[in-house]
Image (cartoon, rainbow, N blue to C red; front, side, top):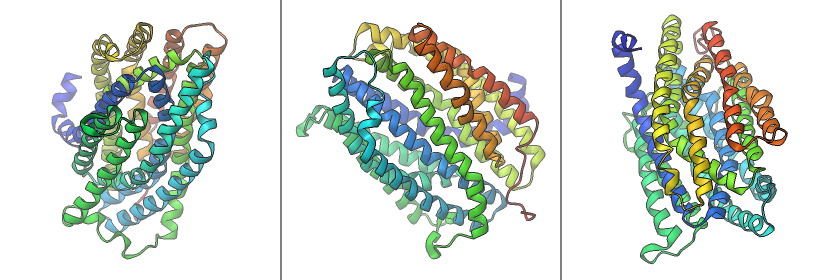
Length: 462
């Protein structure tokens, strides 16, 4: 590994130039999420569980938006590598139109079925009073958060395009500013400091919504004021049309990604539901675990976005051999990052859960779950990059089978069986579910080495 780093020093320097701003933004985002979680956790276990359940559902919306825009993003990256700015602008229009459709569908679903969706996670051995209180808190939170879906949709459309064109610093700066806004208003509105109303769970939601509007405003303003730097995003709506042939290609490639992200996220939320049958205490411990692990996972998750950018540019420029070489360099580099995360998570597991205002049993369970995740961090890092490698060449149906297909065919059935029929505790259930992902890593390696993903979708022959 060390010799490879020395041999390809310039490549890894370029890689980290792209990746570090993404890591910083995502790292600060998840650090503030941790602080948010700690603040809500000060209100009590029920409040923390209600926010956790709501965020499981919002997670599905976020991933659906991400997946819907990802299909167009593959073309954006390759068009930019080809230096076809007309193509880039058309993909931006497509993203904005699709984002609005996903947004309207999500608002309608959460408004009409919010109570039923939240109740799916309240099936454990809980008292009627605790269940009713958790449902009430969750509904308050999610109804306010829905307002923030609107700026989020536009932010994702613009920020994803900036990253795909190599401009990762503006999304980072806007994200960091929004995070700071969120943190300040969380402190003011959750607890009612400095004369602000004490809103509890509702305050956490209001703070997030304010930060979403701040983020999209910063990005939009910066793009308009720096026309030369962001030339590929200027005059997008001089025409509202999108070439029919291109739109068809994006839909064909993008539909599996939209289905993948939404079904993957829904599948993972159902895995969490399997765990919730063990009680609200397990829900709280799992919430702590995911919040802490997400803070450290940003290191290797950011490599996924970086992989898509680098390989997209390679393929768009028709440098297929280089794309294959770059993919393997990134793949093994990500394993090293995963190993680093393992060590960091192991250390963090012994003190971060103790910061939560909850029972000793919940904190102890969270510590053990974080250690279990740490064992599998290199495998998860490998899988993350493998997914983005295959996706970069437009093999979206294969990525659908690899990602969402695996969750529904393997991960969810395993979680259901071990949580309902084995009598095993949460720790062993969580270990077995993560262990099953070793099979996914093997499949990912085979797909990459077969080179089925090495495709230029925007070449002249297309």
